[in-house]
Amino acid sequence: MRALTRGLLGVAGFLVVWELFGRSALVPAEYLPPPSVVAVELLKLLVDEAFLRDVIATVLALLIAVGLSVGIAVPLGLVLGSVASVRHATRAVVEFLRPIPSVALIPLAMVLLGIGPETKITLAVYAAIWPILFNTIYALDELDPLLVETARAFGTGRLRVLVSVALPSALPFVLTGIRLAATTSLVVVVSVELLAGGSGGIGQFIGDARSGAGRMDIVLAGTVVAGVIGYLLNEGLERAQRRWVGWSSVTGGRS
Amino acid sequence: MTAMLEVADLGHTYQAKDGAHTAIADLSFTVGTGELVCVVGPSGCGKSTLLRTISGLIRPTRGEISLHGNEVRGVPDDLAVVFQDYSRSLFPWLTVQKNVEFPLRRSLGRAERRARAAEALEWVGLSDADRKYPWQLSGGMQQRVAIARALAYRPALLLMDEPFASVDAQTRFELEDLLLKVRTEQDTTVLVVTHDIDESVYLGDRILVLSTSPASVVADLKVDLPAQRDQITTRESEAFVALRAEVARLLNVGKTSEEVKARRKANEQQAAKWAEAERAETERAEVSRDEAEERATT
Image (tube, rainbow over all chains, first blue to last red; front, top):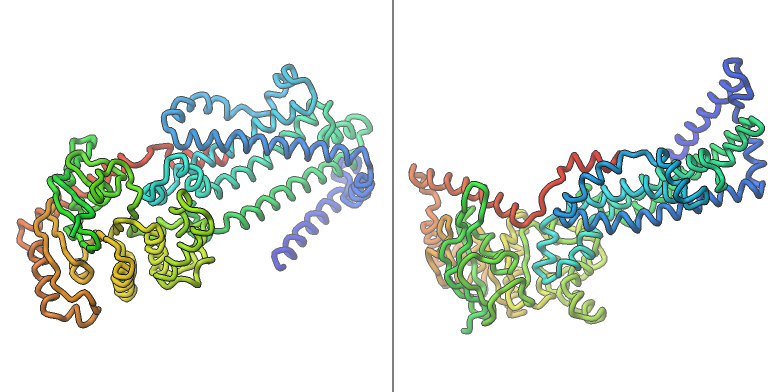
């Protein structure tokens, strides 16, 4: 409760500073409208059907992207993490691909995939795969050899060891990877919407509000919504993590 | 008495970068059905290697091991191991009950697994802890879970690797008595590897004394103590005291001549080398921790 109170105090403090800054003569009010003005726009948007459609488009793209990344990166991580030769063979390619910013691939993706939702989903997946993949590989590296020996001494086969020992043991790390990936995906999805347009979503909404009417109050209201989505996503995944893999924090963060 | 375990001319040599290290030279012994045999030897003499070869986790470079007449190639179906480090051999994401059920998942249906787990937990006096997680229990209780898990598997041979070395003295006494109780009740054949001379005398029907590395059997002693043992009266009995002195003499304990010291030091260095070779043999290498961490966070 105390933590919640403190958190709310922090938010309130931030809003006060923003309000004062917005109302001062330091910046023109139309560039940085104060939160009282933004809040009014925000309330209007929350009952605006077109905006809600955009929110749904963004969230849906985000969920699909995270789901696909998990589906690709976890099995891939299990293979790369347990077969050293494959990991060595793919190292150069991985090290080349990983640092490329997703946003730099927008032109390529648009040429290949057009401007539909596939583009932003693909680019979000591209960015989200890495944290999940590396966390899975890292978790397998940290796998306690004695757990594996215990399972093997009871006649557990290699594949079963992977599924019923390595995977659960890696789960805390994998979930952390997914949490990082979800936030990254949100950034990429909104960026692609904003820069490429054409597929709706909060990003495109913000872009339109800025370039059309120059309504910074609406732009900021949309931005706040994007921020809230990111916050809820992270919070939800953190809770899931505490609930499902609470054991990992009590065993001294061993896994 | 029929032989449950037969080890004949066993030898194992690890290949390491700077040459080969022979952990076990020429080891032969048998364990009869229903017997409890303790293997005691100086640290680094190859006890763990012996245990790993018997359990089929590594293949010996020489010799033969057979379990009730069948040669051990790969992990035998009816063998269970209790490791020293209970905190790392129990699965932290599974409850006590699920941990005990783990080795049964392959062969038994759900109801039977549950019944077996409940039974084994009762043997070790942990019926109330079935829904707890291992990390919610004390060290001694965790090791009892590991014992229950091994017993639930109904192994033909129960192997124990320094099983009570990581608990306090009081708990060790309790666990020793617990082991003696369940092995009598369940008629289990047990091979205990230990470095504790007193423990080997207290627990064993027989004691195999190993030499310094490379290990071979120096003596095979019968423990002439009544089957019913007691932590106080057994330990103060003449037979107990005489036997522990004999084992100690065979192990050169307490002698501090320069020769012995030098040999011991050489042994410890050897042991460290093997540990390394062993690790190299059993573990997948690389991607340093920092590297992976750094990647994961970018």
